[in-house]
Image 1 (cartoon, rainbow, N blue to C red):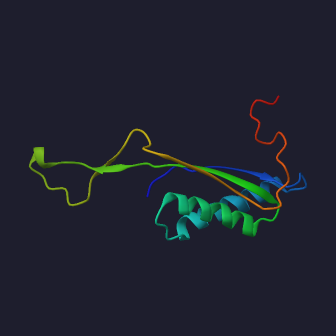
Image 2 (image 1 turned 135 degrees about the horizontal axis):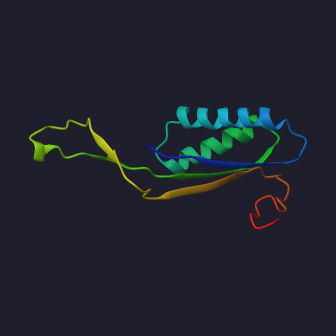
Image 3 (image 1 turned 60 degrees about the horizontal axis):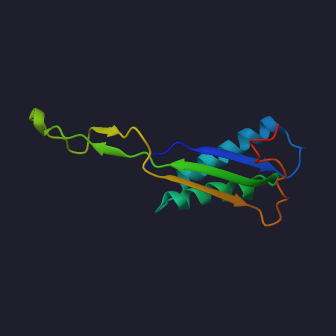
Length: 119
C-alpha cells in the first residue's frame, strides 16, 4: 500500500501543550499505519483515527485523507530483460481518494474550526 497522509485534528479545548500533542498524535498515526494489518485503506484510516482518540483524550476529532498511490510493474521485455517484480513506476496521480472522520461521541461542536473561509 502506498499513500500520502493528510491528517488534521481538533481539540476539545484550547488548554493543550501544542508541541507535545503534535508529537504524540503524529506518533500514534504512524504507529497505527505501520501496525495495522489492513484489508483496505478505509480500515487503516479508521484505525489511525481511533488510535489517536484512544491515546490523546484532548483530541475531539481526526480528519484523514489518504489517496491511493499506485505503482505499476515496468515491462522490460522490449529491452530483452525480465522484470521479476523488481522495477516499478509510481503513477503520476492518485487513483482514488479515501477520506474519513473519526470523532468522539461526546465531541463538542466544532464551531468555526473547520471553516476555512473564516477570517
